[in-house]
Length: 263
Image (cartoon, rainbow, N blue to C red; front, side, top):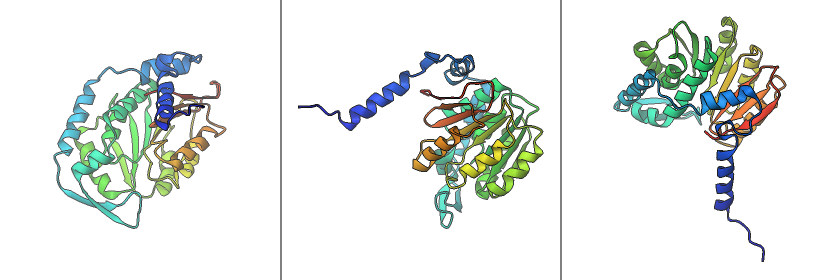
């Protein structure tokens, strides 16, 4: 009688494999990717700015003001939540925010673009490593943009150019205005039907040092499909799948390869 493993055993084995694969850089022959894993992804040192940003998150979690906004999954419906609920369900996690900070800091990104700041905590993480940065932020929900704008006014170390509207309409102009594109964070999980269009528009402006980061690459079948398409793009060289986040690089000097790293 052949023993067939249960789904829980299979899932556990896959999870364990993901956890040990390239852990601490083991098995990675690319110096670029090895340094990325050991010095950025696996690095856990706190920075003083993390405390300030998380303090703002704590303050927002006390706000019980109701906000009515277009449902991100069904734009024809409205949803009402308190600011505290929006922060809990929509804002970037501290872990992901800290990684954005480390990535921007490691690559010394000066010209940053973000799609979907929600309440703005992710933008603070992206732009807090230094002063003198140029950051354009696009948000398609005006109610979220208002909350983010208030937060930027209190905590941002750099002027944030916050624009509200449709991403497909705003993105081309934003890209053209930047002297170069160093870093783009796509927090566009609910733009599943537009993600490939936005990605292909942004790819027109990349340089060898450009970094793209995507939130929620495995959140559903559409995002998984989008991630596979993005990884196959001819301009893409190295990709790093962190399961919940995806990182893409375009340096032609790097050998084309896809990495899966536990995070």
